[in-house]
Image (tube, rainbow, N blue to C red):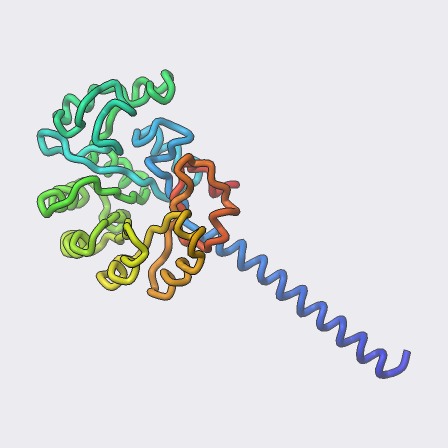
Length: 269
């Protein structure tokens, strides 16, 4: 082998080594990025337990979810409780508007048998009960606020201060005005924008919202939305499919910082 051949061989070896190192670094980076994605259990994880019950929340955290999303409503006697629907029929043995019942009445309803008779013991939890559990477990909560107005905001904030840990609470806001109100009431809590249009991205971030929720269907039509959110300095949360059948790989291609999913074990797949 002459000097030129030897030099060319060395160069090829060096190039291959550099390429291998770059590819390996990329894989490591991808793994790191994946490990840093926060998994949020939608209503505690609807595929594993009856939604919005203590059983669901505890199970989700046990499966590796780092946060539970909960829906906050007000009872007839002014006590905050957790239920997604405005009416009781779908997830309890009650009927009619949930806010027409007192917390005492709500607490006696069966909130688990609709899912499986084995969960007939499950009840509609109060907001205070969930906050107390989350504080003891050092678990984060994402609040989906089902009502609006200053009185409601003050009631939510008061319960968080009394029973929970404000720094472990993420307030889901649906308007700039709501974001501003909660920034005054709970400055320690992060905020997530449940935006109704992509045109809301910048206005929400400008008012201090740290995370923006995007729907998968939006990203399918406009994949650059992730980059648009990240350019503002905010994080992006993607909502999985409505039926909970999302695959992790399908969601990861949009580079989310957080994933809201019905399947709390998603992060382990």
